[in-house]
Amino acid sequence: MKKSKNAIKNLTHFLLIIGCLITLYPLLWMTLSSFKSTGTIMSLPPSFFPKEWTLENYKTVFSNNIGTYFFNSSYISIIRTVLPVYTSALLGYIFAKFTFKGKKIIFSAFISTMMVPWIVTIIPQYNIFNKAGLLDNHLALILPFVCSSYGIFLVSSFMHQVPTSLIESARIDGCGEFKIFNKIVFPLIAPATAALGILLFLAAWDDYLWPFLVINSDNLYTLTIGLSKYAFKQYTIAYGPVLAGSVISILPVVIVYAALQKYIISGITFGGVKG
Amino acid sequence: MIKRTSLNRNQIIFVWGCIVPSFIFFLIFYLFPILNTFVGSFFNWNALTGIMKFNGLTNYKDAFSDQLLYKSLINTIYLTFFAVLIKTVLAFLIALFVSSVKSFQKIYRSIFFFPTICTMIATALVFRFLLQPEAGTINGYISILGLAGPGWLEDPVWAMPTVILYTIWKDFGYVFLIFLAGIQGIPTDVLEAGDIDGATGVAKMKYITLPLLKPITVYNVVTQVIGSLQIFTSIIALTNNASTSSSGGPMYTTTTTGLYIYQNAFVSFKFGYASAIAMILFLIILIFTFIQLKVSEEDGGTNT
Image 1 (cartoon, one colour):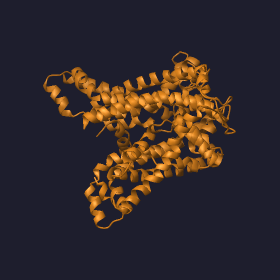
Image 2: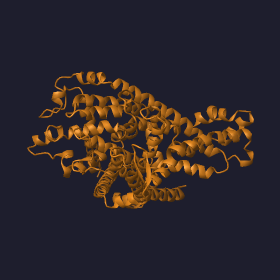
Image 3: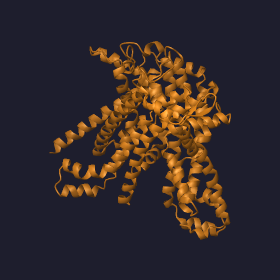
Image 4: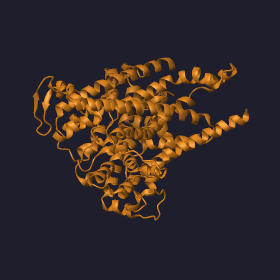
């Protein structure tokens, strides 16, 4: 009995390890191949490890402006994290802890935008920025994201963990409303805002369609756009540099994931599993 | 809860000072655009000149006789059905496996979830290279086995299954993570009670685990369906043809409705027609959104 249980356990591990290898294979191939010279990446028979390690591909992408794309993606993604985290937390707090006229309707209106697919907003959004003369401008990548309905939803459901008595006693002490939020509420909801912040950062970093539509100038490209335009502009794809660019685009994600995995997972499971 | 009567002047300024600007924000960027798309779908709306001429139901009539729209809808349904089905089954099984072994759970979880957060454009390009028919690594290995690999993204029959393969690899970690959290959330005393009653592994699965996971499963499926119906970025990355600078090939076999809307709006500059198709797809998505809301309501009602 015990023996067969062990056998099942080992078999399960075996299957899971195979699954892990399949999952990681494309990423390992990408990383290793980015150090191969372009001619050997697509040569047959395939080789997993580079025969000769080279930084040639990385040199090529850096001479092709990837530093600028990386900078653009970084600062836009950081703004698209910090601003909506603060505004969503503020609004989540207001919806959870205050009673005012029309609250339910306003809250529903805000939250309903969470479920609106891009297909029904993209044309008018494009028009708005076109009319405002803000196409090919980084403001177009920031303004539609200064507040997040998902964030309001997440924070307002987390707010029951903040005791109302704490807020009231601060109020009795003569603390202003913004000060109460900034000094007392905001620090207390750090687990929720951390999870939200990481999800927003990852979404901003990965954003493709919107920058693809509104940004035209090479020096304004984000990393995703720069990478795809670079990959598609030649008739024969420059495999090596594209792979090096891919590695660079995934690197920050790996760092964020390694450092803050706990918050990513709590943010993702929040929607599906009620805790 | 603070009673309404207790809102003093400062609080009123604070609350409305925050609500009003955010309301304007959601109005401009999300609520007005929906209305705008709906109204625009009844117009001959030229994207380049911005001129709108009312043409009633013409866009919708055109849509119903548009063979390419039908093809894109069929492609989208084909993709959604198989991608969601395989992802859900695979993610459920792997979540069961991971929760059943006591060691290395966190490592497995980290690895399986990892592709979900990787940049989509980068990973899609990597798949494209790996699956390149002539010199790609995968077909290289297949030919070592003495077989001929398929044309993958360049073969009309294989193109969509290849897109599905990529989608599964990319997204299944998300479904897996939610299943795993759900399975780990099943109280151990419930399962132990099953043990005491002499329930076998299969019986426990059938009468305890599966029923308890039903809400999560429905949530997973519906979320995946809604996402899959709008798929765009991965299609561009996987199928963009540099020499024609168009996507969705070969022979429109990977043209999804999301891509078709984009092409009509921003390649052919037919905003009105694109809006009409967007409304049609929106209607289909709304049906699933309502299912999602219904399920989460029921779930909330019984759980809390």
